[in-house]
Structure formats: structure tokens, C-alpha cells
Image (cartoon, rainbow, N blue to C red; front, side, top):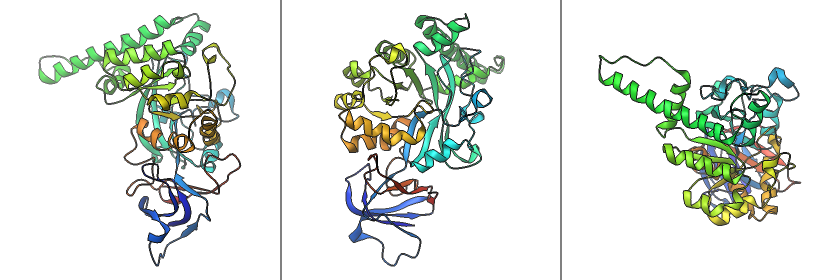
Length: 385
């Protein structure tokens, strides 16, 4: 397939004002100016007609497929509010790829999402990175698990306060996380000892601790739900204590401590920004948050937190960040290459680069313009819109 006559947003190089993208199979084959387009192309040609060509959008944090659209409790599978420590829960066991919101994601050019459990539990479970097209989640997986979800602050406090159980303070939320990470370390030591000494018994299998092993080894990053600045600091503190790979999710008060985040080299997935200040820890929510983080040198992405903001409004959330001070290309990076980098997927996703997956969006105007329309969407080289 050959896409021609468009402004090409490569996201890892300069914008090509009038260019093309050639696709071979499920990969990007060539990208360049129209003067260098392949001659005598025999495959399908999509004419962007002066529009824009960019990588498929990536929502770096949402709950797509975990909370069924218009179905209520029957399809509410995002929060296991019965145990504050559930690292063994896997998003892929709950995602419903036939939820109609997947179709809305595709129509808006969202081709990849990181989706998983909500923030009811201090240790919530495993997120998955999946493509948005398919009927069988196993065939949609890019990487699973892609992260372990931790939650700090108001949400776990509120859930277990309502149940009259622990944790009901930030101290207890953090203590549960710390306790189980320490247990995982001891469990790992016992496994190693048993492997080295045939006279040492294997520890009893523990699904929770098994799920935490790649976390404490630094192989699986933790995505830490934190809005307030003090909760962000707690997330960083835990990560440093246990040498964890850490990403702050939401980071609503990140704009109050951007220099500290930059110093710690902690990336942030910001959002949702399209909504009201519905709870106390959102009191300092502002559209300027991404721009302030950008200016401080913090790597960040923008998310919808679907269903908090419907998944199809991911480009709108990026556009609101432009209203808050970002440059358009910086905002576009936050839902393409930056999102891929933070997710650990930039080797295959996030930019129009030869050899990467052919996830491509064609729009009639700049992809962040509110009145613009999506003309075509390719996912793994196949046109789906």
C-alpha cells in the first residue's frame, strides 16, 4: 500500500511537507518526499489529498474493554474490591474486544492502548498493551503484561473506608505495597536457594508473589496512580527503595514539582484533562500541566483514562494540551512516540519509521484539529477505516 500527497508527521524526524509512506505487508517500508516516491506502484494507493499522515495514536493509560459500555455491573471488571493486593490479576482475562468502544477508538485513529485494572487496590494487577482491532484478545496483544498497576491516594482509601477495612490511610496503602514487594524479594531468594541446593525445599507456590517477581527484578515497570504531589513523591520513594522502573500515571499536580520529577527522570502519563474537579485530589488540575512538564524536561504522554474520557477523544485531549501551552507537534508526540517510549514499545510503534508496524492515520487536517476528519486508518498494514 502507498499513501501519497500528505504532510507526513514522522515523529522521529522532521515533518515532510509533501510526502509519502509505503507499506509492505504489516510494516512500514519507506517514508520520504513525493519526489522520491516509488515508481510504477502496483498495489493499493491512498491519496491523502493534501491532508496529514501520522502514526496510529497510542493511549498510554486507559481501561478500554474493562468496563463495558452501557452495561453496568455485568461488565464492570476493572476493580476487584475484595483484596487490596491483587498483582496476579491480568487485564487480558477481562478485556472484551467486542465492546463498541473499540470501534470508536479505531474510528478516531487510536490503534494501540495500554489497558488494565482500575485504582481500587494499592496493588491492582497487570496492564496489557493491545491493538484496537480484533475479536479475540489473544491475537490483539502487543505485550502482556506491559506494566504492574499500583494505586496511591484517594481511590484505595475510599474503597476500603467504605468496606470498613484496611487500608484507610495513605500510610496503610503504602505499607501494603512495601510489605508485598518485600515478600516477593524473600520469595525470590527462596526460589534461588532451592534451585542451587537440591536439599532446600521449594517455597509453596504463591500466585501474587510470582506476579511480582518481574517487578522486583526491574523487568516489569510499575505504573503508579498518583494525583497529588505528595502521592507522586511516595511513588518515587517506593520505586527508589526497591529499584523499580517507575511511571507516574495522572500526575495531576506534576506541574507543582516538575523540576523534582525531571531530576528523578520519572516519566508521567498525564490526564484525563477533559472533565471537572470531581474529587479533592483533582483540585489543582490544569490544562497547563503537560506544557510545564515539557518545559522542565519531563518525558510525558497524554491519556484518556477511558471511560473517564471516552477513548475517541484522545486527540482532543492532546489538543487541549496545546491550548495549555504545548506546541502541536509536542502534543502529537504525547499520543504517539512518547507514549510508545514510556510503554517500552518504541522499537515497533509510535513513529513512521521503516521497519516499524504499519499503524497509520490519515486525516484531512492537522490530526489535532477539532473539526478534522479521519480519512483512513491502517493497523498492521491493513486498512480498517
